[in-house]
Length: 312
Image (cartoon, rainbow, N blue to C red; front, side, top):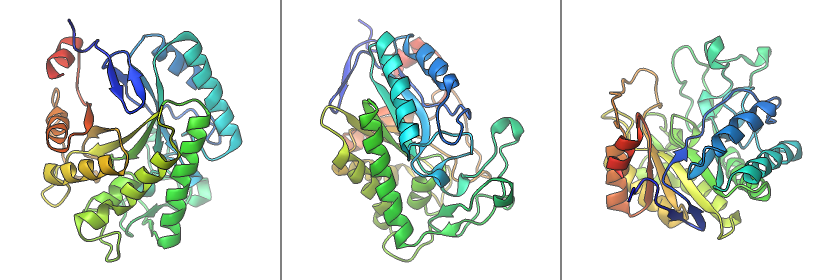
């Protein structure tokens, strides 16, 4: 019997198989609202009968979006459109639908990839970005504003509010994005967090905001749903997050209410090379699962069913 096509329970959610469609940015939203493109895109994925379909990174605040063309979940119109899309997917397919809740931090206010993905100035329709410390993504990017306590509190509340909206819209899985160099990853990594207050310095202090977000989302999520965190297994830098620190974060995330961790890597700085090869991130997921006890999802160059079956 195939393990890949065996069921799995995560939190309060039953997956019919172990295949998850990863959240894929479509850069097709208008004012944070999903469009007919999202209906078509997600429905065609859902009818393929994977175990889980994840909706792309969705900003919990206007300035939390990666680009002006990314979806958000901070107003009623956005919630209503999301609910329509979730409902149509569930009308024609039986698997759970998840959504990735995100804040892009210093990597926000960027243009769409086919126009180069460069930062958009405020004068051209972009916005001022925030981060744990006033360190730009690269010398070609603007310097973000270092967040104060009010900004941090507002971010936690925004994640919780977006989670409530996602639950009301019918989403079964809520995944908190804390990887790929976005805001929560920026707090976690010593490469981007040079704070000297209670949110910086030690690994425990750097974990504080992401863990507060996980706890806040868990608090508004019913028991019949699942909460996950997308996290990094490595910054691919000796000065950054390594597997030991990743295991510590995964363990703490589990205690804070996360039912699973989707383990990826990299993205914290553009100048750090990543040794991409088939299954290159799977070892991080395996080690995190073994040492923390949390359910893990592996991603990155998993190219066919035979490889996936062997990895499981």
